Image (tube, rainbow, N blue to C red; front, side, top):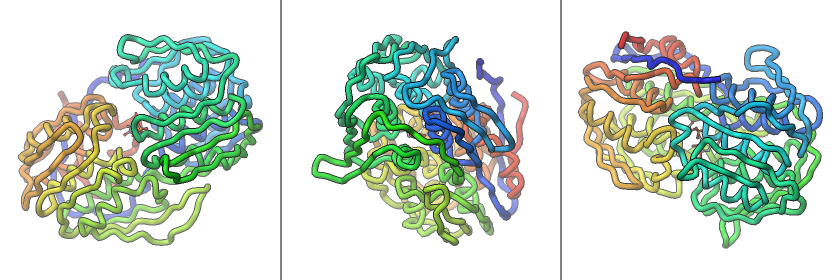
Length: 447
Ligand SMILES: O=C(O)C1=C[C@@H](OP(=O)(O)O)[C@@H](O)[C@H](O)C1
Ligand SMILES: C=C(OP(=O)(O)O)C(=O)O
């Protein structure tokens, strides 16, 4: 299937305060993993609250192509009958993973230690992103891999017939690299070990343990060490996907920058490996309360209550970057409304996401009158008492850039335009109606 949608120009402008309840969608990272582990286990996995964004739908289609029985039984409710660890069959056609780095990297890992061959492609954005960070360790398991020049998609993997377990130190803090290795390690005998310098999101570890794998994580002098025992029988489990803190960040940001706003965002994951933005916002003085903290589906969740109020710029330490890596675009928007400057350190990874997010945010913010400085691995945004707006932001097939600039326009003097809102479908299909329901003035425009 091809995903190239026609570009959809959009505009947002300031209006009255935002109010109401924002029911944000299911967590994207957990949704991908639920489908993949469901496909690798024995029995039926029932998933509720699955994010039905294009990234996750592409992973669902890929799991069916590997032989799992994947069925939508209702809104957000999916059934997966798995084939067991090592049970994937060879897909009949090329697998198009669309816009999704998580999808393609985790699925490559999941098949790399099974003796079948698969070819992966993606859209123009995904085809520019680095894949050697995953294919290098997967070849060490014994997989034969051919990639386009530069290690990019399309990539063909001939899975290892006789895989060896791996001990691997990740070169950058990345949950996708870690997860690809752990998924490959499932079908290797013995212990596969991943060592990371900073802990990254731990949804794979939590879910693997929930499905019956023997897995442990330790902080040692070497770093954060995860050890998985290969060849488990994964047992199908019900998975209740909590709401996505990365998606919640957009209505939360809108409420923080639009005077008089007050919103509630129920049931959002508060997994500590995803919490960096909220820690930062509290440091900036944001009026955010977490209520009714509880555990759901093996993840901590809470209801958020957010009110507009004055904010002050802060310096975000590099060690926090992994726990908020997808939230820097929206933080840079919030920072434009904070007193003083906000410095984001250790964020070089932003340059290899769906777009170069440092460049995309810097250019779009400058076009809207905000002063921004960037280095290879940092970004500084200078806050203003009144943010002018009136500019056009280019989104480069990047959902988070599109949503960030639509939120910016809700607080600026003049409207903010984006060239293309269609990528929002990858992670937050109901973003526009949800924001409109809170009172936001966001509309599609003709080209
Ligand atoms: O594992 C995951 O689900 C993700 C890991 C992060 O990527 P990296 O592993 O490249 O940091 C993040 O940016 C992405 O949106 C989701
Ligand atoms: C980086 C992201 O996703 P992925 O790597 O899965 O494309 C994201 O959702 O911000």
